[in-house]
Structures are given as structure tokens and as C-alpha cells.
Amino acid sequence: MSRETYAILIGIFVILIILSPFPVFFLAVMFLSYVISREVGKSIGVDISLFSPLVLLSQYFTPQLTPILIGTISLVYGYKSWSLEKFFKALFLLFYPAIFLSYLINIREYGIYITSVFIFGLWINDVSAYYVGKRFGKTSLFPKISPKKTVEGFLGGIVLGSIFYLLFLPLSLWKSLLFSIFILTSGVVGDYFKSFIKRHIGIKDFSNIFGEHGGFTDRFDAVVFASPVFYFLICAWKFNC
Image 1 (spheres, one colour):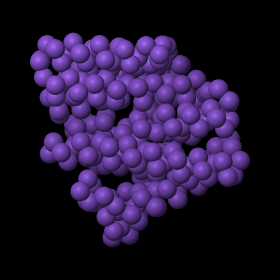
Image 2 (cartoon, helix red, strand yellow; image 1 turned 180 degrees about the vertical axis):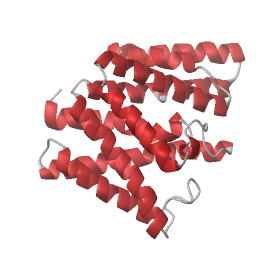
Image 3 (cartoon, one colour; image 1 turned 90 degrees about the vertical axis):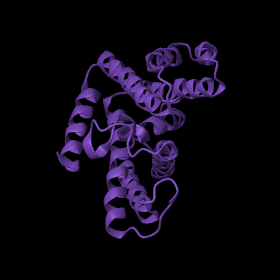
Image 4 (tube, helix red, strand yellow; image 1 turned 60 degrees about the vertical axis):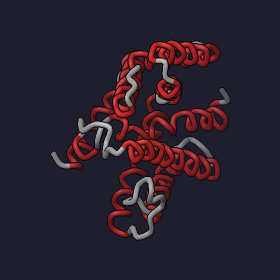
């Protein structure tokens, strides 16, 4: 299938998940945490993905205890392998993506509308950056990490993504503008965060389950990184939670 066909199918599936009852959404995010942890873990030689949903549950229900849980699991894994490198890799995999994605569940608690706006804004940024960069891109942004991504593409994504957020966020104009910059930039950081790992281990994608879109890690990198930022800002500026 073409890149566009995969994108449409992924979009339809994600919309159905967003519209589903809260328990179904919760389970879907737990699965996403598991599969991203598995993809990254297989790439770096440490697979403790079964613990990722557990960490997500801990962060959602008892965040004060989550660092202890992560430290304990990492210690046991490091002791069994007797490898400091694997200890730190386990520590990383238990932190990313479970902690980040727990905030996506928090966002969903504030309703389908606000969750949809969050996801669609990131998608518009991603799609716009790709096509603007492909058509007008000349200046590499971070060539060592992702040589095909350009300043022009980055700016195109930010502009069009910001327009979407300005139209649909339940905030004032200036708050929406600042909000857009923070959210979209954090999504781009998530993209480069993932790409940095890929370049160092010498792979193109973490899997090929979505064809040219790669795997779950490649497709949902921006959502993972932007979720805690979105939740923090929407709480501070709208819901006062």
C-alpha cells in the first residue's frame, strides 16, 4: 500500500479509538506503551516491554511510587544480566514511553473533543512538514539526525498546525498561539528523539508494520512527547486541575 493509504487507515483506526469508551481507550494506550517499548527494546537489545503497561498504570494511579517501581525493576534486570549498560537501558525503556503516554489517558479524561484536537493538530503538523519540506525544503535542520528534514518543512508544519489549534482550542488567541508553539515543538522534539536513537543503532525504522510509516514508535513519536506538555498546559490554562 502507498504511504497515503497507510496514513488514512491509521487515521481511521485512531479516530475509532478516540471515540471508543474510556476503558477501551485506556487499554489501547497500554497496548501502545507495550508495543513501542518492545520495538525500541528489540532494537537496543533489551526487551522488558511487559513491564511498560505496569509502569503506565503506576504513573496513572500512584505516580509517587513510580520512580521506586522503575528503579526496582531496572535493578533486578541489571543484576540478572550483571551489566551496567543494560541496567541503564532498562531504566530508559521503563521511563519511555510509559510515563509520557500516561498523560494521554489524563487528556482523554477531559473528553473526546480535546483529545481529538490534540491528535489532529500533531498530525497536521507532521503531514504539512513532510509535504512542505518535500516541495520547498533546502536547509537541513539537524542533518546528523535526519538529513531529509528541513527548516522550511519545520516552519510549514508549525504554521499550519498552529492555525488548526487557533481555530479549535478552547483558549484565547494569545494562549492558543503560545500553546501551539509549545505543543508542536515538543512533537518535533519527539520525532528527533526517536531519530537520534535510530541513527546511532543504524536502522531506518523500528519496524515495518505500517509500510513507509515504519512502526508504532515511528508513527506515534510526536504524540508520546507532546502528551505531558499538552496535559500540563490545558490544565494550567483551561481546566485548573
